[in-house]
Image (cartoon, rainbow, N blue to C red; front, side, top):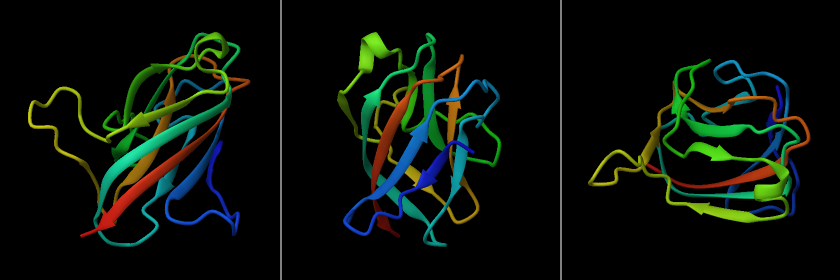
Length: 135
């Protein structure tokens, strides 16, 4: 597992998840996080902050779905190569790009936030900040 919920007591207001690059290209191969609240969550915004990008030409997918699945409703095929993202922050409205009415991602109590790399993402260090509403 290369993703984990931050336990830093100074972080408040958003779920903070540390992401560390790895060689895995399996679906959810960078890790997955179970719903932390035990009820349906409407993800309203997500922010990514990269300390460093990957040494390989990887794309990153992040989304909500079944355990072990590749999901893309937060981030879809985002290039994470160091030359592209090093020390940069990105904002995502947490909406599915293919939809015209832009629904938000719903994280039910039985689903996971999954992280998938398309190629080796070794060297990548990032934080995902997730804002949500309990519904």
